[in-house]
Amino acid sequence: AAEPSAMAASLPCAGEVLTMEKFQHWRRENPTVRIAHLKGFGDGIGNYYMADALEELRHFDVIAFDGDPYKENGFTALVPLFLRLGAEKRAVAFKASGAIATLKRGWASQGLWSRLA
Image (cartoon, rainbow, N blue to C red; front, side):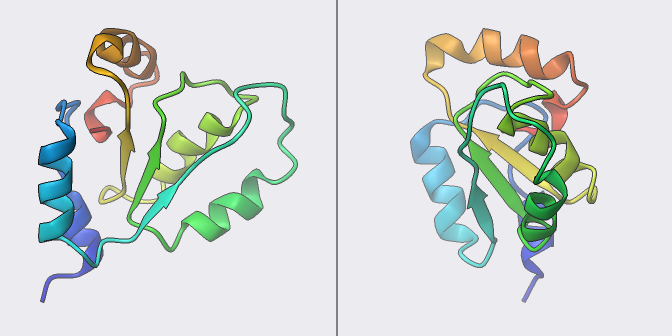
């Protein structure tokens, strides 16, 4: 059987927009991929626990979040840190179809659009 991290790398990325049905199908086909759902404050937080949070996330293959914009003083600062842990790491942003262009602009400016689905 393939390693979960290799299966995570099979997640359609490169900024591909997936419907919930497509994502759910991928998830059913890859049940051992470890996914963490990130939630937090959009801004105004310090860098007090980033290292601790990243250490916990290290054991996951994919992180999922609501597609909030990147902010260095918000929870989304964890997204690029997580993706830098390895080329096989992926992130999934959940957004309504009408908000995809804004999501793409925000994360492309961070050079990360190709690692998100």
